Length: 452
Image (cartoon, rainbow, N blue to C red):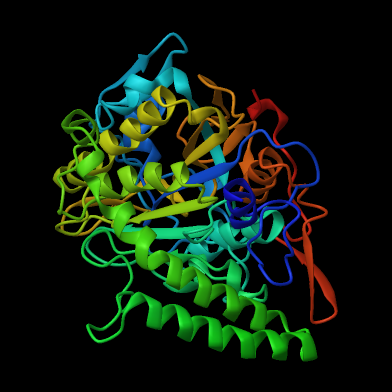
């Protein structure tokens, strides 16, 4: 009886997705990994300060960029005659793989042999909101399903007591574009990301009022869902199934969410590894929570950290401000890779790090010196989940403007992430307004050289 109850309580591939939209189900082929943690650096980290040393750019510092580079190009703020800007950062090669990184990321250099660095990522959109949508949904348009939503739609989740797609935020404000970055678009709303707070109650209004017992709440949920099931049988409306699942999930989360946030079982050594302090919200705390979430079967966890928009105003320049935000994120991100690896979770958990675009080789003179948005080539890194460790993939020209070798477009990145989860990006579609939509639109290819 106990075994039967346990088997019935777990989400399995045989579960009825009509009554449980988030039930786990097989992909198109055997997956290489089971979970994704996407560390989204909102604002656009400067690859030229962190990953891409360019001696020629140093040599040409202060000179106007050759017109051949910028003819017919548009930028967010600078003009075509902007002057080239070298960097003051020192670079070195790290690990047996010889990955090149700057002094900005000393902790990441310690896991150089565990990560795959993409040095020529390309996107299509140069303004923050649409560019974030593009990186997260494959389209600059408002209202398309996010990557996490497509993953949940494709293979569901094995977590019974937590959402399949969870969002954690840190930094001075939320990301531009807001909730549509993790929305479900035209997919059923069951697949949208659920934001959790890193301190206090994970979700507001999750706890019962004092006068309502858990038994009272259970009877209420059962009664409401009985009416919903009758309506579902009559109409077949998928949003009713979503509503049923939401009531059930909320009820279970009244117990599971406080347990998730309780770090009393974590050692001081682990807290120190991340640089996290219990009860204090931070990117470090969110990285630790991300590990705890994937341990509990959550399929897709996305962390947003602001603000990487280094144009050159006070607080957004390439000196102290860049040091500050790197200090907030470098140790926790590297710790996450180390922690997953030592717990045996990195083999089937993919970590992705990057923003919506990079920064220009040209300087943007404001109060201080900064860089404008750059879409032609920037850097991201991945670890675990079937990605080839220690690989440095892609090359840019002498000033870091264009990718000239192994360019990875955002659509290619999405296709590869889906592939490693056992999903064919060409077959993962949803019919909407008379057309079959997919995450990669009408483009994208799996980057085979990234695969272990």
